[in-house]
Image (tube, rainbow, N blue to C red):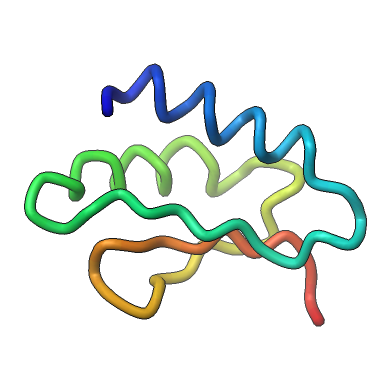
Length: 69
């Protein structure tokens, strides 16, 4: 997946997220996924819906936390 495609998909998920959505888990892969991981952090660290960005369960995932539980 390319950067522009990923941004479109993530933006759509954020737009569809309502008040009950706690987090969005993004699977970007590990071997070649670090460029997507870096893009996610750079593009969404100041997004108004994103409370924080945290690593997932493994190196190939990143979680956008939208609200506290």
